[in-house]
Image 1 (cartoon, rainbow, N blue to C red):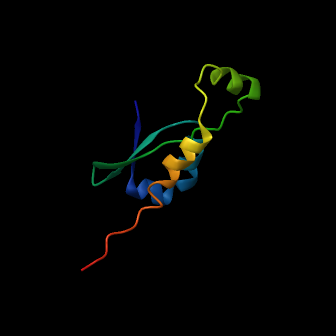
Image 2: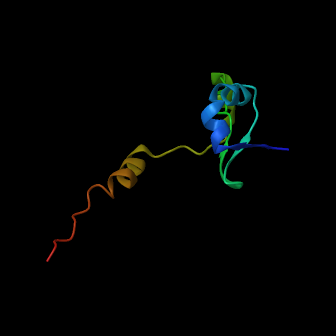
Length: 84
């Protein structure tokens, strides 16, 4: 069950709340008994070995560099319509 934290608790016990987040706990922030937000711990980044990345993309189709560049540049190269 997700623990509810009042606005007052957040103000007065921020250190305790931060420790709970460090421990992986998700909290619901309430104001006058009404949920207004959720505090959740940030997901930690995970290192992925280059061999795993290469294996994941091994079956991907090749990219035509010139066509890719045209697709990326197309929206930038448009002439804006003049304003009346």
